[in-house]
Image (cartoon, helix red, strand yellow):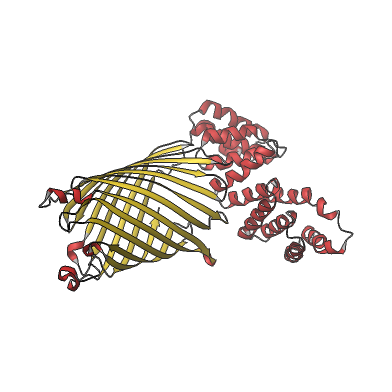
Length: 508
């Protein structure tokens, strides 16, 4: 595969090189001309120096970052190559050679899902392009979409014998995994006929008599989250010393863990239906009667149109049931239904539309019926993201409205929540996030204990740093600080708190 990609790389250089060489009679084009010569002579470091000089002279010329990307590939600097191919596409969105080369880089990195949109765009422009059908089919094959892979293998155009063999071989495998063993056998025979001495002939011969096992599709996923926290007001002691509560012990360190297992019950190219179970646990070391445990069972259906053009949509529908204990005693159970629609209007603009219905039931019965907290809650809102540099940086803003219908008149309320935030990715792929939430609660009835209509305002400020580590980037380390300021016309409900958290997340 690497040899084939290298051949494609060199051919691309000669296809696009003539455009800039036509200007060789002008001295200002000398760095570009020199870079082309050094590249063809195999002096890639010198070629890179010349191309970088040319880029400063012609910052809007899409050809030059393309040449730089090709040179980085020869120097085995794939990340830099990808960066310059993306820059080429930003300067000229119809530059199919850059999209193709970027797809090749992503395939070498086995990032098949990321490669597909770039290659599909090229396919829309030039479906007859040499070997393009094979590379697209190869991506879908590795993602387990056999029929989609076959559709591209069948459309492939090539004059390269090795590509022809590979295309047939993977077509045979795709048909085998799809249960079409008879058709697969005919394809394996063709592989042998093309070149009996080919490295693919021997496995093809074996596959004619032995049905290969279908690659194991990863359906079971786990996530483990651990946090060590410091909370200076876990039990929400009021800011003012009402009812002599100010002397209560409120500070503690907390050990938090969350383990979730999810299994994909069914999966197609456009959708997935999965079930999961999660166990959440906190241990408050200095306030042991405030330990919390939550058992969460959920069903999730995800549908994506998987369009590479804009706008494109993804829809998610989740049902969850959770049973929560406080101080190891039954505290409440909840049923939650949440449909979410993601609409990506442009590469930079993404909007989330969300509705949530929640039914919650508390085990403890209060002394007065007006203080019963069993309730239904409806929440609706949206969040818009403005994304930069392939989503590494973003700004977001949103609004949500919710209405609580409680059994006890003390707890009926209407809430308005505004939120804003940003993410900026620092060097070494360290993410800095800032989030702000403002929420006001207007209670519908006079509180029976204070004889006023309760009004609360909550402000949350969160700063965090996080980084994905490990070979597969499936581990995340994070540091987070949250400041909460809540005011109320009933002093009992006004409080401040600070929470510091450091932790890790593992996904496998």
